[in-house]
Structure formats: C-alpha cells, structure tokens
Image 1 (tube, rainbow, N blue to C red):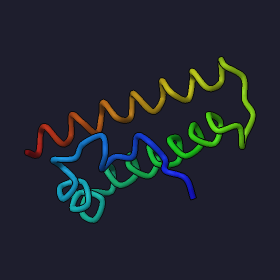
Image 2 (image 1 turned 180 degrees about the vertical axis):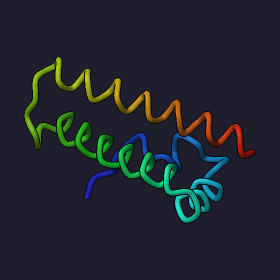
Image 3 (image 1 turned 60 degrees about the horizontal axis):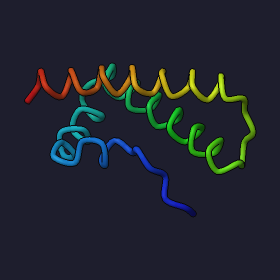
Image 4 (image 1 turned 180 degrees about the horizontal axis):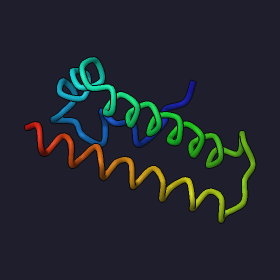
Length: 80
C-alpha cells in the first residue's frame, strides 16, 4: 500500500500521543479524527487516479479537510 500523506500524526508530530488519547476519551475529537481520516483517504485516492473526480470536487474536499484540521489544531492547542 502506498503512503498516504497528511495523516494526523504527520501533521501534528509533537501531538501524536495526545491525538491518540483524545481519540479514546473525547467523542467529538474522535469523530473529527475519523472524518479527517476518511476525507484524507478519499483525496489521496483522487490524487492517485484511483477514484476520478472533478477539480471542483477535489478542491471542496481539500477545504473540508483543512477546516477539520483547523478545528483539531484548536482542540490540541486548548488541551496542551
């Protein structure tokens, strides 16, 4: 299987343990992490031509991923 860029552990390498902990203890954070993961995988499939999609759709998915990543970042900052 190929490497999927932009995984949360790569995006927040200093917070990998905190991410794991929050996924286990905070239902909202776990949902965000799951949504981020699914979007990230879908974007990767599109980028690698496994799943064709229009540029507009791909852009919309990237914006959604960024919004979720921003919220995850806010949570990580608030709980640090």
